[in-house]
Length: 153
Image 1 (cartoon, rainbow, N blue to C red):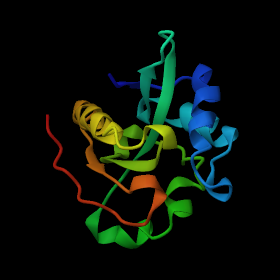
Image 2: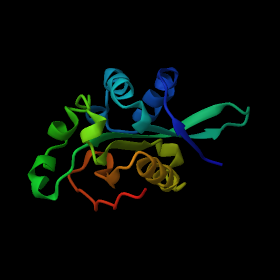
Image 3: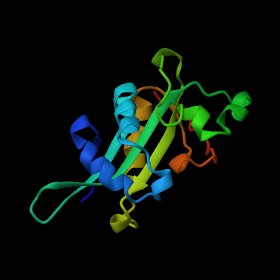
Image 4: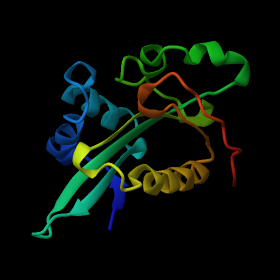
């Protein structure tokens, strides 16, 4: 069974192992993950499975960041590097934010096909509702922006 939980600095070795599933030139460095944890730890999710010995294995990561979204400012979302501060995230004032942006999502290549992001998506939606954000997504850093879900209270 897949469990979804928030990441901590202690998870960095497992996070970096999952990141190996990206082509080398597209991988995020450890310092980027440290910055994401420092800036917005509530938006750094892990999908985990138990291995044969009962130990937890990180099989996917998903990072997000809060931002202020306005439909009239879609040009601001053209470049992933600009939106995410090259993956390090921008300083955030939560009071001015109304959306979550999906910074990256990676599934370990040995575990693809398990609907891991669907499991995470359910949790992200609950989290975003709890903190009164809408959810805007750009999966895996691609420039495609999906719909913004209405905020629920």
